[in-house]
Image 1 (spheres, rainbow, N blue to C red):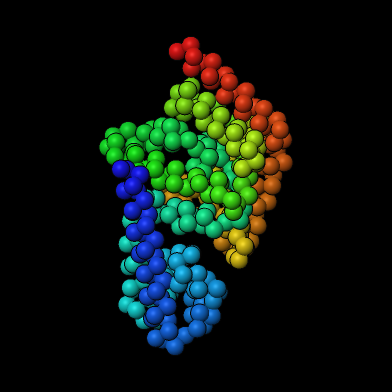
Image 2 (cartoon, rainbow, N blue to C red):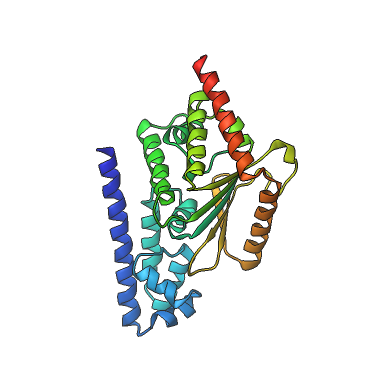
Length: 284
């Protein structure tokens, strides 16, 4: 029943975004503007406006606000954006990034301490959420785990994005959830690599100092839009689309890949550490 409820919630949110798009189209046409004309006034392309109207892409808050200014809609679109984001299972600063993941043709991530969300097992995700929410109700933890698992299918889809992850060795060595849980997580990661769904490299302790020390980094590329970078900090996230900033982030990621173990050596290390945890789990 929980999964069914989750499905209804996702359907309802999608229907609401479709209403957002229909209202945008209706009010744009009433103002006598083409998609291209509105796009120029709110600093996006006409193609973006078309994607907003078809509920393919969701606008950012500042774009919704500029649409209100141009169409003189008294804050309607920004208020609706806030309501829809508030209804998302994700935190406000990550909700838009979750939408972008579905549209990306390539995703590159650097994980300094925790296995990236797209690669997590439910058991691992639960351990992460329980650690940061020790007094939360069980229903809240379940909802957070389901939301994280809802993102994972994009890597199983026939049109899945190219995914390249660089994981610091810390992500393998910290026994999140205990030996059995972390062993299962590493087995899952190794299976995805062997099935050629993802490419993974491990940045070993021996690499020493490196770019992005202690900081996460996600790079997203799209078929019809410029690349974007996303960096996350304590209870906050920054979506970066300035071309110069994104270029610098991409350069940092290239340095991380250069310092990491080869994909073959990385897979061998992941499987070796998983086996160590399995042996530990069997003796406890």
